[in-house]
Length: 476
Image 1: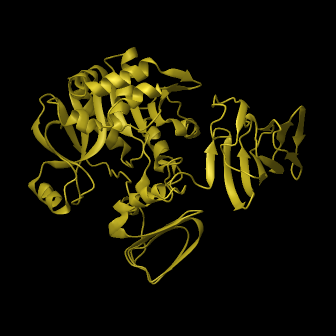
Image 2: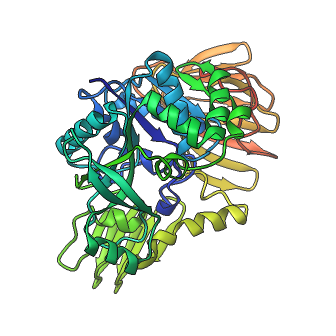
Image 3: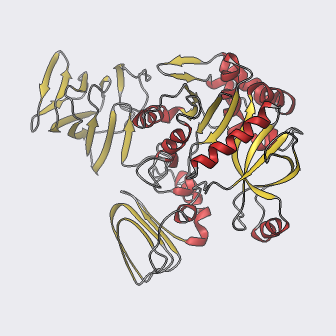
C-alpha cells in the first residue's frame, strides 16, 4: 500500500522563543542535533513512503525547499497557506490536492516539529494504522504517557477493532486536563496523549469534512480550485482560504466522528513544545545541568542553559532555563516554560520585532545578518549561494556600499556589469538600478554598509526576480 505523507509545517513555536520566531520557527532550527526537526521528519519517511506533500506558510516556502534538498528529499509538492487557519484547513487542502489524483490514497498527516527517535517503531505503527485506514477508519497515534502532563490532550481507547493489530476505537477525548486530573486518567489506564498525527484515506476524510465541517471544506475547496502555480509551489487563493474557520482537525472532525481510531505507541515521542520538553531530550551533568553552546555554569543545579550568541555565565542557578540568541536572552523558571509564548505576545503588543525576525534572515538566494544599526546607517553581512542572485532592484532612500569578503560577485549598477573579487568594493547610490549575484563556485560573502534617511527592508522596488516575488514585497 502506498502511503502519502502530508507534512504540516505552518507552526510558529512561540514557546521556544528567543530561538523560534515567526520568520524562522522551531521546525527549521537544529534543536536536537545537526538537522532541523523538519529535516528529521522528511528523513523519517524517506525510502519507506511516497515523496511528501508539504503544507507550509508562504513565508517559509524557500526554507522548505532548501532544507528538504539538503537531506536529499524532493517533496511531491509544497502547498502554501496564505495565512494560518489551524490544522483542519491545512489538512483539507492536502486531502483535496491528493484526492484529485487518487481518492483512495492513504495519507499520513505528520507535524514537522516532533521528535521521534524510534523510526522502525514509527513505521510499524504507521503500517497498523494504514490497515485500519484502508477499512474506512480515521486513525490517530496515541502516545503512551510516562507522566501526568497538562499540556497535551488525552484519548481513551475503547473496543479493539476487528481485523487490525492493536488499533482501537476512540471512546473519548479530554482536552488538556490539569495535572491532578491527568494523574487520575493515567492511573485508570487506557489513556494516551493526543499526538496530532493522523492516518486516513483521502475520500474518507473528505466525507467526514463534508458532514462535520462543511464550512472548512467549502472555503478550502474554493482556495484549491483557485490556487495558482508559483515556481515549485502551489499557492492557495488567499481570499477563499481566509473564509475558513480557524479550527483544529481534532475539534472539527476527530472529536465528532464515529469512525475515529487510535494506535497506542511509545516511540520516544516528544513534541518539543517548550524549553522544558527540549531539556528532557538532552544529556545533563551530575548536577542535572544541560549546557549547549558557549556556556559556563558554576555551582548550579537542575537547569537548562543554551547560547546561540554570546558567552553565557551562570552562578548559583537552580531550576532555571536560560537561552541566549544574538539579540535576546530568556530567563525562566523550569516550571514556567509553557508560558514563554506570553513573551512573544507581549513583544507583538509593544510593537517590537524580536518575536518576528532574527538578526540572521534567510532568503531564497542565501541570507543576510544585521551586524550593527546606528543613526542613518546599518551594517550587514550577506551570503549568496553559488549560481543565485538578488532581484534587480532599486531603493528610494538609501545608498549601499558592498565589500567582497570571499568569493566572486557579479555586480550590476545601471548599465555597468562587472566582477568583484575579494577585498574589492562598489557603491550604489539611491535610485540606482542594481543586482548582486554569485558568479563563483563557493558561497559569496560580503559586507554591506547602508546609509540614508530610511533603511527599512520595504524600501525595495523589484524590477526582475527569478524567485517570482512581488515587486514591492519587503524582501530582497
